[in-house]
Image 1 (spheres, helix red, strand yellow):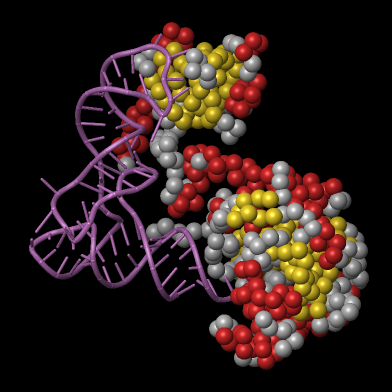
Image 2: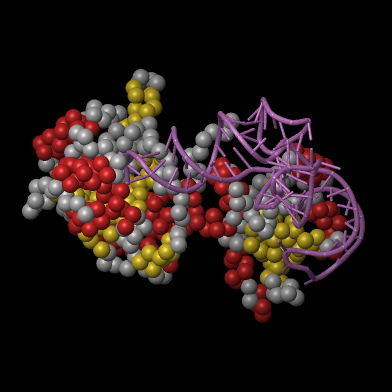
Length: 477
RNA sequence: GGGGGCAUAGCUCAGCUGGUAGAGCACCGCCCUUUUAAGGCGAUUGUCGAAGGUUCGAGUCCUUCUGCCCUCACCA
């Protein structure tokens, strides 16, 4: 409503009339509010002066004095302002403040008779006058559409949302530390690629004007990271966005954050160890426990994690043998899956998605996929039809994907060309990548972890939109 | 794209079988110098998502559209 804004603009002008600059410059140094609360001790700190800044969240005026809470991203602190103490001029300025305004305060710390640590204001500075009101203090902001579209209000009014995104940042920091400790280096590879590769997905297309050249937002960094292996960078990782022009759901956002890493002289077994150590370690770091809540249930992240082969699980939950083409087709038809002219392994993959994934609750490594659906993966020594690949499932979600990387150039070339005729995808092969392999890529383990999904698991969020600051929504008309 | 649900004040929500649009908080005015969902008194607050239709009369019933949520399909 317009009048709410209007009355605030009037107050803004009154502040200006009083010579107050309502949009202050720097205000330093300030003590984080949590620190004020943590450091307080009755004997020594009574009356100790502090300087703090934050947004006014509650306001309880009592005529010639008032209590209010200010909030910063560490916590909430009560402030007491009294006419006698700050003088009429300051107090009149204070009277023009509203919920949502950002102020700086200076004063002595004390405890009220109800026992709350409070700052007794000596000086007050207006740092930002808010023209629109914050959501209601008691219920906060619940409307998910406003929460996603105007995340700034969500963050400022819902503490748990702020906590979650700070947690997200810390998790990613921990991942970096973990990898740095294992001597990985972080790199950045092209987000705009002339040939989108490294995964099967529809890309976004964009155009470079000066070069008059179509480019694709990357669907995966894989082929570039492997070039770095060829170049001799033995342990590389990248945490960055991938873009896939496909549907949206509680588990899919068109741009999402992926961590991909490659470790020379390792293989998918090495990647399994790394994955388990990383993710179980994160759950312990966050919860001090391997048993963590997710949705209505609990997840048991205690290592070692269960390991099952693709075909075992297919047999167990779909009652069909990976080698039984007829059985797979029949099962596929039952489930309404396209089977005509489709390779049996692709059918198996779909059946797996339909019947097996939903059973995989606690962390499970699914290993040894049919090689036909793994064009970038080395096949198993004891069975050329199986690939040295695992996918990690947690809470029925595919969370990670890993291979013993195929480093044989001629075989890689052959698989690319076969895949193209099969899939009729974009029809382009990254020939430079194939060329790079001919210079010799060390055997290596590769791993991709969907970071948003990992954050979902670790923060008990059931929608990917709750862990992405600005999820994609339709433009409002 | 298919199926299901939702949209009422700035926010959180009521609104029954169709009969003059409500509450709490916020906002506005007055009182109040240790309160904490401060309190007391008073006043205001609306394109009921949009457009059509049925009806004497629509927030309510019907149709279409828009947006969001869930779900299925594609995928990670």
